Length: 103
Image (cartoon, rainbow, N blue to C red; front, side, top):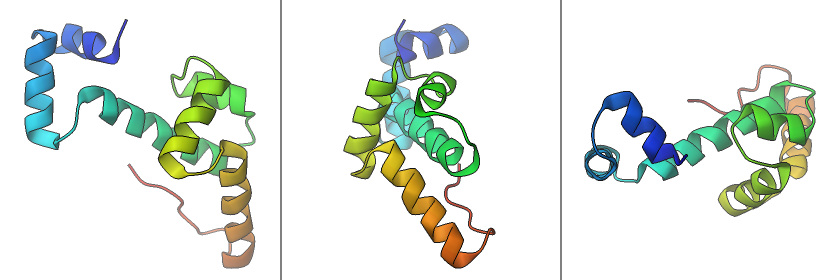
């Protein structure tokens, strides 16, 4: 089931109507917003938890670690492992109070 169809069931409007309204308010399609939220949550988990990428993929709704990898690479310009190393390196030099991402 597509993210738009899932949202449609929750709000009881047609998929097309939901897409139009969503884009009018946020300026992007429902699927783009869901992907953005998934990537943001994956960023947080990579930075804060000692979970493997496969676990993070499942926890954030990606169908496989490979899909998480592809989306992460496309959206952030680096794979999840490199992101984690970068964040952990920043924490080491800046202290533990770094907040890597927000919702």
